[in-house]
Image (tube, rainbow, N blue to C red; front, top):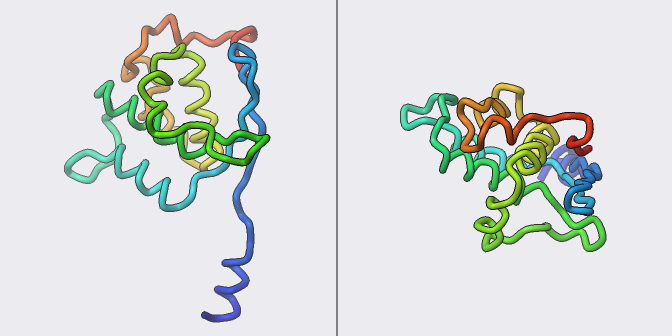
Length: 143
C-alpha cells in the first residue's frame, strides 16, 4: 500500500449531523452513506436499461427510502445503526410526511442530488403517499 493510500485510509471522512424529529421525540444522528451503500442506492434507482429516473413504482420508492434511512440513521447515544432490516415493515407504516422529510435529509447528507431526491419520492406524483400528507409547514418540519 502506498503512503498516499495509507493516509486516505486513515482519514475519517464520514459526516454526521443530529436530526430531531419532534413528532417522535427523538434525535437521530444522520451520517453520510459509504460509497458502497450509495452505489447500491443508485442501482436501486436505475431502470433495467441502466438509466436513472422515472421511478414511479411505489414499492421501489419505499425500498429506496428504506435503504437510505436504514444506512444513514444512527443512535447518537450508542453509535449503532438505528434500524435493522426487520424494522422496515413497521417503519414504512409511519407518517409519510415525516418519513419523506427524513429520507430527503439522509439523501442530502450523502451528497445525492436534488434530482435523486425528486426521483425517490419527493415529487408527490411519484410518491405512494397522498399529496396532502407531504405538505410541509413551519410546524411540521424537522431539522
